[in-house]
Length: 151
Image (cartoon, rainbow, N blue to C red; front, side, top):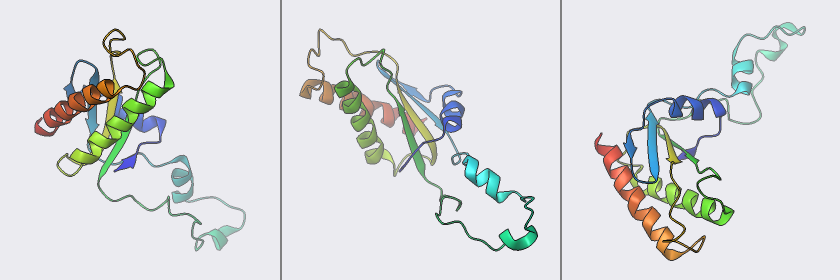
């Protein structure tokens, strides 16, 4: 499982209808891999350099230009308006990554984005990072990915 880092990938996935929803989360999926980064687009096209063919045999220093193997990429959207404290946002993002790791082998490959769409009740979960909140998020994400796998 790899992270989604490009804004264009988030926009492309979130433009699709949700694959599965729960009281607090929504899962979006697009098959295929991420968009090529700006560096890859600039350096894979024929470049018009004044040095002519001198650049043709050069190899990039990093391997970001290599096509990524087919697999799952994960992005999470946990906005401040639904989780005011950073402790809560971090807890939810960790739960999202852990749930995706547990289900990655049975989910279809592609880009996956999990979005927090409603806040957890402060009256029910007064602590920003309580065990009760962790267990509630985990249970809800398990159901969510279970439904996403079947659809």
